[in-house]
Image (cartoon, rainbow, N blue to C red; front, side, top):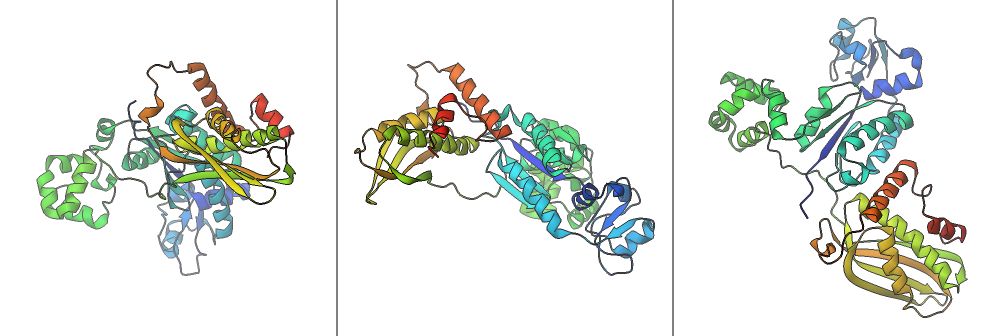
Length: 392
């Protein structure tokens, strides 16, 4: 099994603060809107609409200068509580596709979908879905870039702003795109670094590639990094929390349960939710553990390690076998935990067992529908029966 091709998505909201204000007051649409402070106050521009940018107004510009350039603009203070709520809704959408997230700011973030893209039809489908869902749920547009690295995704998102979508597939495509652009297109190259390079006649990406030794002489190890980025080599990783060693879910019943088929229904629904979580992370679990708490509060666990599992059917099958080993007594709580995670386990491939391609296709289809319409809205016939029995 070959390793998945690294895929990063960068999402950047379009004129975020201004867009929220226009969303909530459509009469502001099409007008030069400047958010930060009023013309007579001291302050800077937090953001502005694209109409204001046509007059040279930019973020971090003094309000006094913004007013000089655009005296007929609409100036207002920011509603940061409102922006924070919109940001929260946006990030909830991002988390539906992966838990490998790097939130760069209130209106910008990176998603590593290397191990989850195939679950949604590919990174391109995720990018377009992100745009559609953000508009439908939050009422805002965003620009999305799909790339093979952090820098390529960032550049891609800026390529068609506003409300843009662009894909950069590999290092050659990136170099072809930026070869004659200013050195500041390279991640981390700011005004001062660009000025140092400019003094040596290095002003474009082409110049960097033509003079790699000179760049390193000027900037040392930092220069070496710039050269690699100019070549399209970017191995930086997103800043994400460490992997948990286990993942579990439990259900406590209102009344003690003596019918073990009822317990099996609960396990089926728990397996469904755990499967959704680990498949979103591109993980497979080698160990399944069933936890049971009896009416007298005595607790036992039963575990099985073997073939890697990830689907609801696979997890439930192991959990059901483990439940058969539990003594028949009134039960207060039942749960499942998964551990022994891998992202690309060769052991899951059985050379003597043909893969069930129809089953795999169905599993992927169900996961995509659950993501789109909600985990509890899409269910198999057996899961529906389990829900009716009050399993969870």
